[in-house]
Amino acid sequence: MKIIALHCDYIRIKALKKAIKEPEELNEKEKKGYEIKECLVVLSAVERNDEGFEEQIAGKLVENIKGIAEQVKCNKIVLYPYVHLTSHPSGPLSATKVLYFASEMLKKNKEFDVYQAPFGWYKEFELKCKGHPLSELSRKIYVGEAPEGKGKSIGETRVMIESKEEKVDYKKLLNDISKPRLDREKLKDNDHRILGQKLDLFSFSEVAPGMVFWHNNGLIIYNELADYWREEHRKAGYDEISTPQILDKKLWLISGHWEKYRDNIFLTQYEGKQYAVKPMNCPGGILVYKNKPKSYKELPWRVGELGIVHRLELSGVLNGLFRVVRITQDDAHIYCTENQIEKEVINIIKLVDKIYKKFNLLYRVELSTRPEKRIGSDAQWDMAEKILETVLKKNKVTYKVNKGDGAFYGPKIDFHLKDSQGREHQCATIQLDFAMPERFDLKYTDENNKEQRPVMIHRTALGALERFIAILLEHTNGNLPTWLSPIQVRLISFTDRNIKAVEKLKKQFEDENIRVDMDIKNETVNNKIRNAEMLHINYIIVIGDKEEKAKTLAIRPRGKKPEFGVKTEMFLEKIKKEIEERK
Image (cartoon, rainbow, N blue to C red; front, side, top):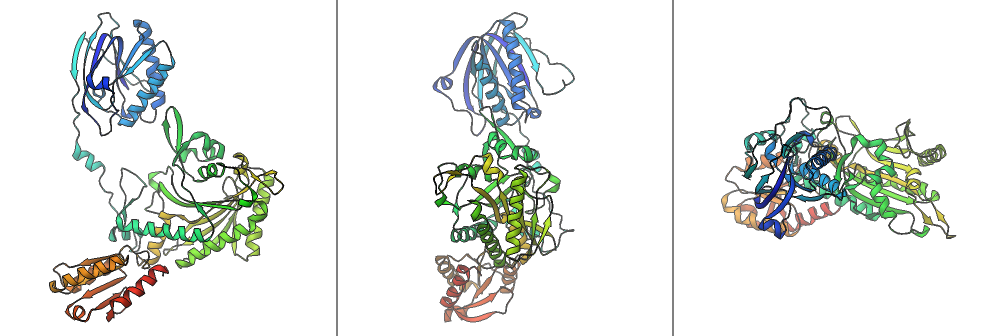
């Protein structure tokens, strides 16, 4: 950070126009312009290498200001954002944080009157420096060792400046955020990244590493999968909730995530407090449980959340949809009594099996036991491991013991899906937790009106939606079932004479909530069919003079022989049933 401190007889400030999209709001005084007399003006520029150290930089800035103010005997401080002191400015968010922290720290010292020029505006200011030797000082503020060289002070005693817009090299910035190139040479044809491009489902950008940009077609798959998840969970007696993505550090200290996952958590600051972008959904869900007293009559309470979580990952391990930074977890938590655990775990196993069979996916099961670093007592771990093992044996589930790979709060049953390339992915999980209810002091009132501690079951079925979609795309080679397909039907005109009939049919299909598009370009029918087949569309319908006259359809079901003379009503009845039953 660079500053110039000017001991002034006065400074007059007036905001002119917006310099950023969302600048600080102006009050009436700032709109008209105002004057502050007998003050120490601190022109400040936060630099790129200050990002991530905003609070430390602000602390050092305040130390410098206090020292200068004491030397020049001045108690009015004017913080003035002045980016032009540096050729490597930080982003607006970082600069705002530094100025906010510095302002709050100075205000705590009641001997100072603190003013701040509006941030995010082009401004003009007029000031008159005093003539003593300390009236003009420049400083370089840094975290860590001092950089080489010393700053220089300015020599004028009276300056009048109008801020000007900085030059931006837009071409360079565009190159910096260019679309990453996908190297196809080492990828198989059914790799989900190739299918994602081919079917226009999703993309990635270097401006958001490991975070998916869902295109319309991909978002249809994502939303249909989420709707299926919701339907199955409603049937299984789950409530759905949604919890904030950014939560106070103290919550993660209680849960134990701070100690175990600190290096994988995105952190941010708000009003001087440290917050975490949630890496897990469970602590937020626990606060919903704690919101009101619970009775044994309300247990088991099953609650699900399609929660967005973020985890810091090294760029080298990111792998399409398989390994991402922004993750949609189909989380659920069950709060129950000890007597209810076995039945709840059995029900989860049945639900997971039902979902995987829907997609013809094979899986194997592991029992993962206590890790070296964990929370909770050995007695709790003994009980939890025994319960899970008993359930698996009773239900004749074939499983393998995976020693030491349990969650830090409890043992778990993991479901490993095998993809089309022989790789395994841990998706569904059932985790039995006695420790977190104790840490958060969770309670329920039993039939004798006494307070008891519930047990918590953490679980997922799909796991991460992103990873599950990747597995599904590769498993089906992009040939998704009709209910999941972004384009379920494509209508093709045989000649230009048939365009009106195709447009009318498209409207009829849309009215029945069929995802349909049309190809009425002036090309050969064979080309149109080939293009549709490349997009793995479920049904291709060609309308020619014969079909238009007979009011029938010529249909090509994906991967099957064409069907001619099909009545529109019969086809609509068939496809609607196919979609409704999710076949």
